[in-house]
Length: 416
Image (tube, rainbow, N blue to C red; front, side, top):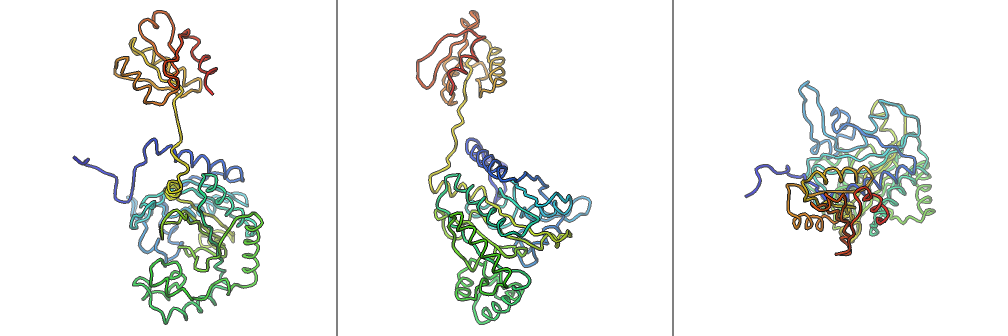
């Protein structure tokens, strides 16, 4: 019989022990970003609709993927489809000192066809830097993501980079791309509206648009001198760090706020259009669009679900061992377990116990299943004598009787 209620389509539950991987991944990103001077930013899961509309009217996010609604006060709001607009809004509102280096972990909401590792509610870790257009920051941000992914043990990752120019050089490229597309057959979505934003066709994953843009002019050939110099410094920086990359002229990303550097990480262990694990780029001009002062910025987001899929495909970053230090077996009424487990936890040890007045056999079996290193057994005899039997579950029958007051010191000596 199926349950009456289930998680909504396009969402999923993450339970222990799988959720332990999420804990380790987020903690690792926190350490990694913190070591580079990034501080955690925690923002709302919904914003005024206008915040996300700044992403661009021609983007799929704005046109068909946002969960937008009117609240009880008549305000038009939307669930977070992308973290960058929220971070930029927070910057404009609070004006932290520059350069501002922030990292986040957050759920994202997009009404789209669910894919492997990409749900209607999916989760990302990411980082943003606002306040400098130095290409060295582009290199740092890309390296931050690259090194973090590698630190998870995921090796089959390809980094693709591109530059999509700026408002100075992009208009000329737009005209060249329009002229190229006019004589080509495009997918149904872009055939009638490609002129609105022809760069969106480069981002399309459908066969017709891929074929139509195979010989299209590349933006890097149309860059103005400042953009070309900036991109040259970025690629030189990646080479200096020994980070391999491929120049991908079709890489424009899905949001209209990007300028200059764009980049993506794809897993060679995943298939086709579902192999992307994250990416980002520079968004000079986006702060102004949000009502703030001229402030360059760059950032990236990495999908937690996609990263874990890539790790699974490579057989790395499995569910971590999280064994208990001790499991208290109490057949003398239960109060001994109540007190001893609390003392163990207060002493910094991981401890658990059985409930419901189960038998000695059932409790010892539960201790074995728990993965605990030691079983601490208190029966009627031990309770009367003020002792505890300490049984090493890794060594089977190895056990000793110790005074109740010496249990914690005994475990400290024997635990690694």
